[in-house]
Amino acid sequence: EVQLVESGGGLVQTGGSLRLSCAASGLSFDDYDIGWFRQVPGREREGVSYISSSSGDTNYADSVKGRFTISSDSAKKTVYLQMTGLKPEDTAVYYCAAIDRMSAFTWDYDFTYDYWGQGTQVTVSS
Image (cartoon, rainbow, N blue to C red):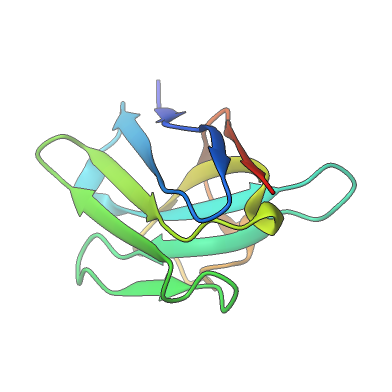
């Protein structure tokens, strides 16, 4: 059974930092790319960042460029999202998702991903 488990969310003040983790099991980690998404109630899920398992290439939403950094540790089968300079508008439930790296896809199209975690809440107070 494939599982993606997010952790590291919490409550932080504006300007603070958090590091989210996405631990994968039940899949061949090197065969899957990982994306981070976030969702606020009543709004569509938004692509935040992405990392390629084969090339290490990364992508970021314009809203988080320069503040968030995605990284991967294949030995631990874990992808991290380091978030700095947090703003109240970053408040959301954050999800990680996995997609077969051989698939043709656009990184921030959530419907193309194969597996999803349960999400972790990030709240940034003003």
